[in-house]
Length: 137
Image (cartoon, rainbow, N blue to C red):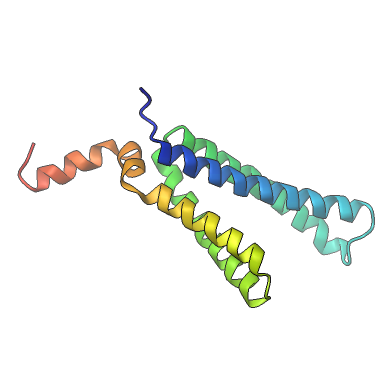
């Protein structure tokens, strides 16, 4: 039996999905810049490179979460908070389908990464420490 709960695996999958979306968007901007379709190539090229680097970092965090590294939870939570901010701006620009998809993924990832089975897998000594504070062994 694996020590990795399904909630942790699903949270890692959602984080990897976000990394994939960022990589695809970065590649899209890069290709359009190379084809001369970008409105301002001086801004589009650094944006594309940043998106590709960010997708690599997001993918690394997803892999670290899948490998049950406790440090990976914080970047996942921060990523989802940023996704919720982007969802808000999609709502203000009346792009409701994109907003709904982003908000659903972010809410699901937050719920999965912060739930009890994921926390217990990432921080196995935490429950022992809490029980000692209550006088239990």
